[in-house]
Image 1 (cartoon, helix red, strand yellow):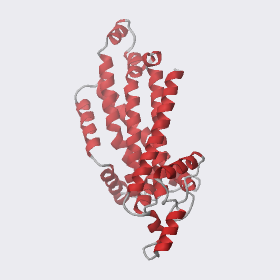
Image 2 (image 1 turned 90 degrees about the vertical axis):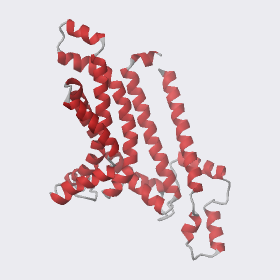
Image 3 (image 1 turned 45 degrees about the vertical axis):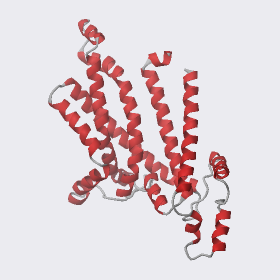
Image 4 (image 1 turned 120 degrees about the horizontal axis):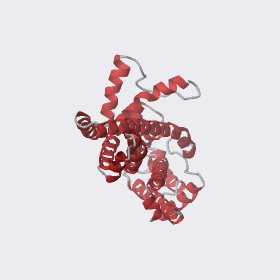
Length: 313
């Protein structure tokens, strides 16, 4: 187990370093010049060259990446090119919004998906076809389109929830919850389909195995067979799908936060890209990567707990 955990950590570190370096290179290759964006188009050539030197853009790429990585390890991601504020402080204020949105959406997707999957597995016929249809629909329907549908139904037509905006929890807990309902439903419902399909397929596969027949022959109740044995054995693949859904939710925040005007990392990434704020883009990319790595580590850990054969190997 310790050897397995060590391999996970080494893989995670290598992934973070690789993604951060690749992002650094790609950002450097983006058309445009960060120094020119700062000094403006009407600046002199001397002012432009001085700004390039001040920003370190005249130095080799590997040297600049090394300095950035060393500073990032100490929590210093530099300053924003648009407002001069520390990037780390901007990430801190927006990270909680994105984390709340993603975790709540994953919870909704899991509850809805597992419930539909269990029902479809135990009741053949219409529900099984319904889950297949929802899976295809969830993959085909863009999240931003579904967001506009929810806004039309529950914000414009009925005024149940606000269409845009965000309220902090400290200022108004009820308003905070209401401001997150539509974004969470947008991401959660569209992400529940693959969880439902995997749950249904996993349970059906387990129900066909010999141990289920043996438990029933011994007189064990159907609820105990399903709840204590079948669901536990079918849970491992579902956990893996949940990890993939989490990654999809992170990418979905970019559009959903923009549509609902939420002050999270997703909308900040859009703003940073439009303004060519390279330090901010780099920091957001690394933050998303770290979140994905941490969740994947948790998924691997839970998978090992649910599957003793992996732990023994």
